[in-house]
Length: 318
Image (cartoon, one colour):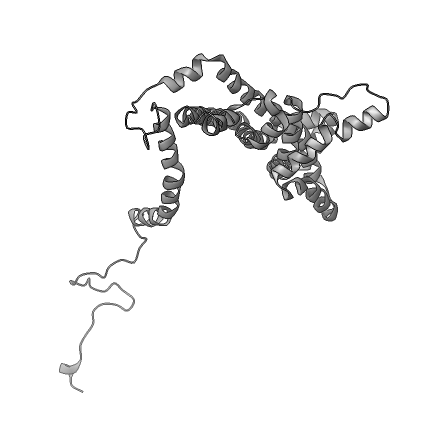
């Protein structure tokens, strides 16, 4: 080998190599955010289409019908009007129905919360898994039968010649049957039995995440057991109380079957009025206005729920 065949490299080993003048290969870095958003929208598109067709379109049709003088499917002379809404606001009969709807929701929500909170607290703090399962099955057992069957069972118990009145009359405790049915009391009792499981399920998840040692720490500082519960556990469970109350209230104000069977002709709420306007009066426009009023009522309750929840969150963070 001659010296002409030897190539000298002045660059030390491990040192920098000269930069290449050619184009660099494409970087395999993270994908742009716009591509991720497009993928997310593509994945959401079936659900959004389902929501638009089965929820938004019926609401739009209901709003349109509420602003018409008749049914445009068979009446070519229909015009736009606010008469359905003015009639609902000016007539005290319909205003009383709105009030009855709200009051029924408040009664059932309060009764469900009073019954469900101790049950949920016991379920959350129960040590034995077997007894917890047994109690949970007992609480959820009403959900295993239909609403109509449960309502008929309460009719058998609360009727004038039902089990309760016949037992009290036979024992000589009362002379006349107690008015337990065909009034607000009977409706509240039956609907509370129906909706207590929903409240329990909502509260158990929240109460189960509250550490028992917080109450123990409060008691070690001199607080009584009741005061420790009121000032520690109860405030921490407010989100669950609000969520369960919202769910039960929304289900109650939209219920038709149980108020109809348990209330008879003595009770009228918005769902009953909507049914009457469609089935008896054949007035779909006014029924649509009543339905939209029920929707606004529900949305108002949801807005109030989020407002209270945000205030609770800000208060808890201070």
